Length: 299
Image (cartoon, rainbow, N blue to C red):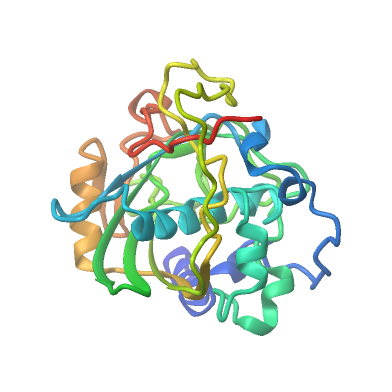
């Protein structure tokens, strides 16, 4: 089998079941009955240091308010899953574990919720750089919101190689020699995904009044004056995850956005790719998150 045919077979398998190309497809396990993150006050939540210093930047159409409550639920769903893949759904954003457990449908189907967001590796591999997402095709009513989201592996990287890194995982800083992981020009491709997320209001969220003139307690290891990378409040309260899916895609709007978001990238026969092999971290900076999260003061 030639290298190109070998890659084609691998890519086809990924398109059929994207999570099946990595150690994500693990035996089913029962969710823990003790969830320290969710039993403690959400305002005390600290993002696990093991996920690294990477940040998240969102884009959308000008008329979309990325900080509005329903849109923020969609953003939090996507961001929380990225963290959950490294540390588990009960140690990611506050409330996400419960939100997923009570979901109507998840990316693997309701019957597979027990293995959803099982950590990929025994030990998380910290990520640097910035995840970029683009939200579009938003449908919103008083009781629901649905949206499509473009995502691409270009932008984030890991300092150390994973034991079993799949082609869909973030690039590391090692030279790639496997021809199945390169395009025809010897560049390392970046792979795009298309998310579809739908959430519905299940009940009115309980009010959590914030004391006036309260000063939030810094909860990250970054500069305390920097924008917050993650929420330390349960944004999912009062909402039900109706459905989300993640697929490999050649969505034209995603491809055009990726080229605009990553002008340093090159285009090969497998789409956008890194300009050097190995990946040079200088063109993958860790940017201030946008929009940042408003923290509830710890008490």
